[in-house]
Length: 133
Image (cartoon, rainbow, N blue to C red; front, side, top):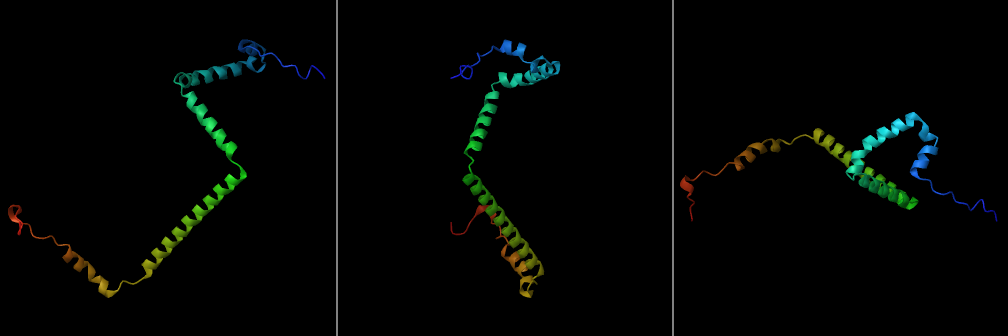
């Protein structure tokens, strides 16, 4: 066996990584990191970064669980929902067109007056007296 393939590099300290990484020697990169740290400081100090990491973990779990069967079921549910909404909207549109074209019978024209008579209030009694009390 070859010992070169099993050799693991020793971990570098953050200071060594900052000094040896060519990407971090560029001034524009350092300026960008400085701006990022300035903007991220309140999030880190307020422990709100934990919430963002939890959200990312939950999203990752959902993506990992999404197999072909789950995607197929969600697609079928979406298609059935859209189909039902489309059928209801067509039925409502058809009913509105039918109602607009139908003639109002002559005996229904007298109905509003009859409805007004039924809605008349009873006469007010003096001093709250009610017969039979």
